[in-house]
Length: 487
Image (cartoon, rainbow, N blue to C red; front, side, top):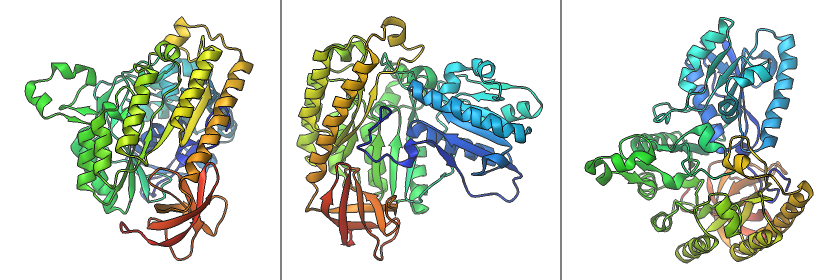
């Protein structure tokens, strides 16, 4: 594990910087190069952007040097993420000197945070577009084509892009993201998301069901329902979640929460494997866990960020749950879904964190024994309440040491969890060739653990029963013993 994330968990390519391509339209004569960073939502947004621009005459390319338009979809969650983007802009600048007609745009959270200031700081940038303004891209591109810089970072109260069919970019043809909410209302003191993605609003459930149906008909076998906080999903006819109390009695009576949405998707597409991310402990309810238990096609895996094991630090973070309430939720998950995998996000070195607070985090991890996790040293983000009110007073060497202890414990627990699978036969959805061996397939089981096994005569997109023979702390290794009943 590095300081930017878990080295225990083999992270999907969707978690890393990636260029995106789609099927080419022979009538399009301009080249678009998109590079995306950060969370899964950014990659989902890039699919929306590519769909919008395909109708404006752009085909995507993997060759930066031939691009007419270069877009970088950015993340602001940590300083390192922003530093990475600025380094990429230096690369783009070098290419632009060779291809002076190339235009460069910055999308996403970093664009929303810095707004027009970005144009002053990075002279190469021609266009700055926030996450809620992608439908305005045709107008903005016209502006830069005419030699003017263009900015649109206005946050929306109702934009969900539910009316746009995303193109599946850089796709394995097996798994896909389906965005169900945008924004976040939780206002954790360390987090920029409420400021860069706005208030929380949910997408029409029928549009979600239609998208999942379309994916199934196109051969996809697994979807992940996406949101900054999926458990807060609430559809009552449109509008911000915070305005739900103002809704009519009829709207309230016919509203759809996340448990209902999950049940609807699982029921209407019983052969589609379903995941979701991300959950907030304060918003996850028992009916969601019970819905998971009722449907075989909903995976037994929950990403449940806790951030700290100390009640004092949780309060300082404005996490609206306690250590004890988190334990109660974990106990209920274990009771209702005994083989459910659970993963975490953890921050080391939050302002004022003491050694006792740190030990509380380690003891919480010992209680849960997470399957895997994403762990970070605290990074102060401008504009957040923590940056305004709390001094970043933990020395870097102390942050690194505490992070190292968290990582070491997670590696121990990761191995403990993978060892529980050895000797079992488990259903695996084949996603592609193993990164380490051309003769092996790679897929994931219901618990989201990576499984590697010899290819034999199996194919991508098939559900296969695999006997697990051995493991590392992140990967299960086995052999196929036949097709599963879901194939």
